[in-house]
Image (cartoon, rainbow, N blue to C red; front, side, top):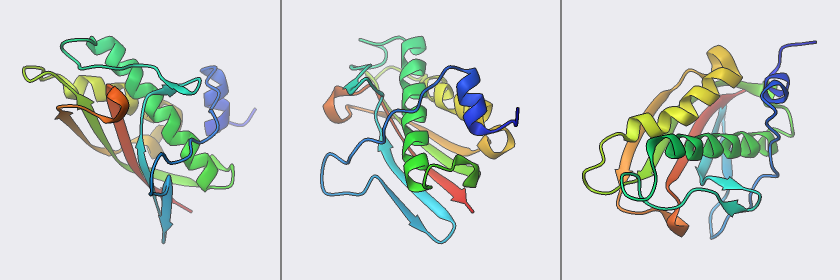
Length: 155
């Protein structure tokens, strides 16, 4: 069997959901030149936000990491839609920007966003090694605990 992103998803028993439609007046992704910009993705699972609340108050780090993984899965869903179903067109994930809804004294945003970074690196190998930001926020849309957007180089 060929080692592909899809085969690694299958090995992890991850099924990419249908790419979510935008909730307002924006596009879920934009391609310009060889760059794919993916709008912020929430920790959606089965059509609902799976992890809500503030890290350090309502949500622990491990659950926050799971939320970040769900965001990464949804990023890959948007990438698949943008690339006509062919994830092998991904050259490299250039940058992930992670936003973590946090109570004021919480300082482990970087550990939360590791959930997404680790999954992307595992699924994409060298192409998944990326620059990153992990930022604490007072709140996020729909009370989501995490939101992540992405910049991806494509062929």
